[in-house]
Image (cartoon, rainbow, N blue to C red):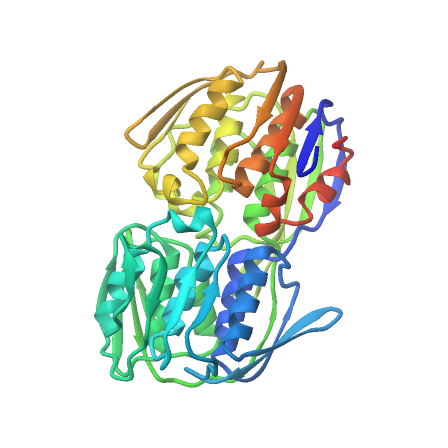
Length: 441
């Protein structure tokens, strides 16, 4: 069937090395930040996914020149607020919440009206969380019920704000940080812990930023209207994409895997910390720093006797994109696992907490989901022999990939629809899986 995969064979033992694609979060941030630099910026290993392509297409529509070479991309920045575009343009963010929320911060001084749209999945997500602070800077963003489509015109007379980010959303925090670049004076942010790629990039570029870390929040100050020059970036491999191969290895018999050059930023490695607490054999080797980001090769070895976890909530923001595959792992661990305060999962490309409940129930796992908490009764002997069809999941790329891992490790005959969903984050997912010996048609 078109746009579907069929899997009816479990993966045999393997011992391999792989390299996954560039980090999606960093790829998008590099492009947006490069668009505001003075001069040419260069990026190696830019992820060529739909979300990143939507970012590049939006910047081109704003008058930014972008060139693809054989091994790298070039962006010609025109400095802060250096966009040059026609009246009444529409930017299409596709499926990318990161792009849609962050680019708003760069458009706070736009002279001409802009509309922002996205696909069906993105249109159902909450944008009031960035509309409110941007309006506090001096914008007037129009929307219906705080969702896409949005219409707005920037303001030449912006005022810095004091902003409290309570959710743990790096997208909201980064949106305000980008708005602060174009705003005179000092913008202050008190943000619940979340991924910090934007802060690391600002530091690297010597943008005036101060960060004070407390137990639960980061206190950030940014002084605006500081110009910076074009820069070169070698983008590391994506930990979110790697997570599916980590769990695939752990749940496959007698298997080993090395994933090269992975970003192991502490704000992104919640999945590693959680899995290691559940007795997973995972090691970092060849650790180094590049452009302020921590990079490592990840060594994974399958074993037995995985145990359940009462997952500390401070890991939630560090593993927010990986919980689907963590839930699958918990289904094979001995004992009852608890995951709490995960309402933010239902604000992703699909209502992931609800989908996880339906998925695990479908494959015979005892599970309780109530008030943003999920309780999984693990079964180390879980094996499947039935027929399973995965469809109607809002074309969520992570649901698709989790389903493939389940099919290859648990058995059964699976038809998994909406294969094209992986193009938003990991276009090479199927070919990488096949390189390990998987039979997928």
